[in-house]
Length: 259
Image 1 (cartoon, helix red, strand yellow):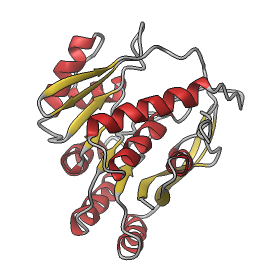
Image 2 (tube, one colour; image 1 turned 90 degrees about the horizontal axis):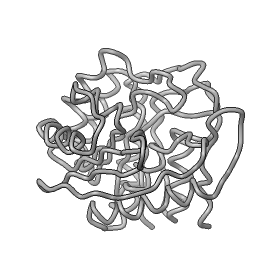
Image 3 (cartoon, helix red, strand yellow; image 1 turned 60 degrees about the vertical axis):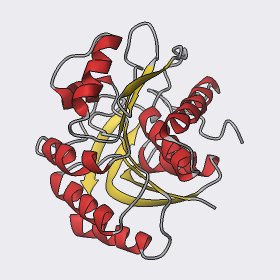
Image 4 (cartoon, helix red, strand yellow; image 1 turned 120 degrees about the vertical axis):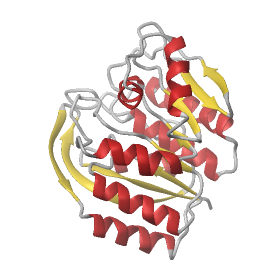
């Protein structure tokens, strides 16, 4: 059985973060492991509290995982401060981790800020260079690039600029575009578009977590980046179209729709 590690924050309501990652990995019939960077008090209406793990404890979790059940792929989600980011980078280099997917989580679906001001530089300097794939949405790509993105051509321009920080592949998610849900994968110096229509639902809590975990599953299975993204996009589209409707805000996906 392939093993996938998620390094991220916990979502007590189960729709995003570690919980969404574990469900996604399990739905792909792989063995899921987690290193928790923070506890959050949140639900479909917002994030109401964050309690960070200490950097030393995050490092201890990673030591326990890599020295016993080595993961075939690693997904990194919410990493809220620079010290935690540096420890993660140190451990991933120490254990020569492979198939790393970084979802640069900055703002939750409900609009809550999840990355401290001082952590952006560490994210760019430490984690992005280690990543095989990064998966920013449009607001996150704008923050990393430092310029607004409103059109597909600007997504390509942003990806070409981000390659300087991330030598791996870059998937800029187009879910915030007005008239489509087209995603851009920039890999090996070429742009590959994944065309998609917007699913008519307000329940999108945890979509970024789910997509990045599904990509990590594809890489763990031995698929190349392009095919891993293709399969992950099909999975998340199905999870959205399944029409799960829970909570009073932006509800979660149905991660088990294909079981």
